[in-house]
Image 1 (tube, rainbow, N blue to C red):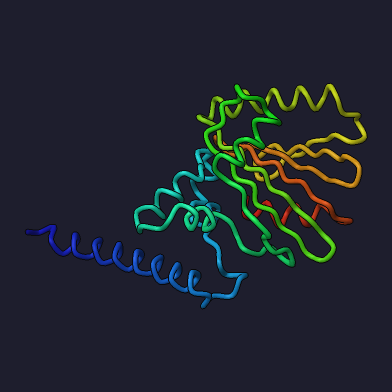
Image 2 (image 1 turned 90 degrees about the vertical axis):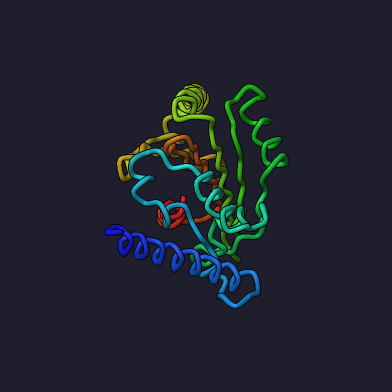
Length: 209
């Protein structure tokens, strides 16, 4: 009986949190929220886990499933509807996204899931490729393969690397497209940008991915 007040307090907090998520989704689904607020990002919900290196979008989807969201609604909640001036035009996931990824990485790549959100504004375009691997080990090994391919095929002028918040980020310029890619836990991100000023735009997207 001595633990009853503590149990009631914890249960109250859980109910409040669940009510907030349901209210947020109801507002989003019915168009009550501005587009700029219509997102639930993994980096926003799990910043500590991201820093620890075991972040995965599956955790967010599992939370969404607990409050009975449809799969397509849960997927859209993973990503911001707007980043700066760029609006998300579409989101490719599931078998379609996996087919695109296998054309790039091969059928034997240890891919668990793939998401491809597209963003654009009047003057800029950004495509984010999110490759979720079966494990952190698989992601590390596959990242090494990507880097080997890049160093073999790209010139020193177009390929470089830098560290950002203890994450190794690789930069590749190809024509008018600026590409950044990096690994966090078991997820590899590849961000392609058509813009005249890539660095600040990348940093803005890095806040969410």
